[in-house]
Length: 479
Image (cartoon, rainbow, N blue to C red; front, side, top):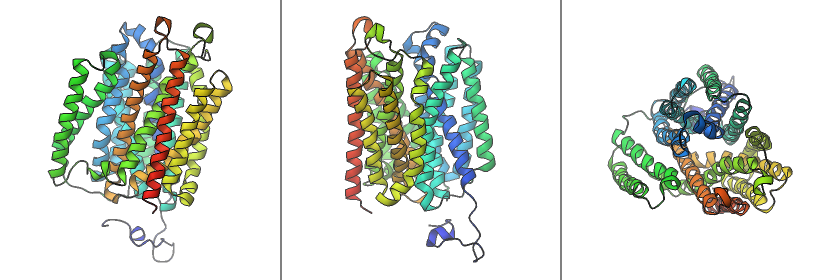
């Protein structure tokens, strides 16, 4: 593989004083990437508790205000494969810095916004930063010694859960003191600036660069069919799944995807090599990623609603506040950090596929717990702790499994595709759980306890299926 360091090509370690320079320390790079990953994850969830407040602030219906979240989701889905491919071509650090610059700019736009359209535009800019995590995983694969790759990927992946909980806590603290959304986004801007400086100063990018010209037709078609698909999924409940608009979006997504596949198969340097999406070793990793995305994103909406439900009014829930939602998820933050750091040792002994199966099984177990027992504070704390164990182990192994079999100059796009299908799984989770809650509503349109428990069982089944697929992958590809 041209351009790789000699030690990596031959497998011989670089020994100081023996004709090879000492490898530069990777700790500062890992710290920078972890901080940047947490900043990106914070912006993904901090807006969710604000939606009711924004409805009152802009005197807008929920269908309009939901675009504050949907715009970020769509922008991230489109930007992730583009920036990760450009990272392989021109350098991952450059694309990480670009993502953080857009996150900073979007945060400032949101912080000064006085109208809903301006806020939505700022959220779209923020959403581009979703490409940061897969770019970081690709950089780790390029830069770190093989023995540390899984652990480092686990630490960066854990920031998704840590940042998600932190975003809820930050919003909860501010929501209790002011009715304005501006302070939340000023904090996001300050965090983005800190992450940008840290990455620029300390992150090292020594990966092989593919070079070449970008596949612009492929990029445009990919953006178009992803927008159609995710827009149809996200608006299905609001518009109606059999409405003309939703069916037209799904039809357009299918047609554009077919054209995109034809182009990617024929072009000399495609944006996405399709074997990275559906190849024999990639397909199982991507399916598991979609299922785990389904499970993790469901937690953000289900747990927030369940914790804030008042038992004296609806017969279930914990009667908590927005801040309480974040506090209940603190055990997940702790266990995710601990077990993501130990995932490397587990994977070294068992292999990443078996490690992924173990993590997915724990993720399924935490939702099964809530489906069976959910009326006490300790139920929510036990769920949170188990969730951190499961996703801490699973995401570390998944990040490794997604890139370990691809050439070094395609590690970014391979990780990006895996992240993209996780985002798609999360979009489906929002639509499925919203449909179940709406379809099993009690009086005044309030979801019943049975609706929440059914959602917990569905999400648990998704994680259990991910575990089974990981086991099948381990048996089929034992090496």
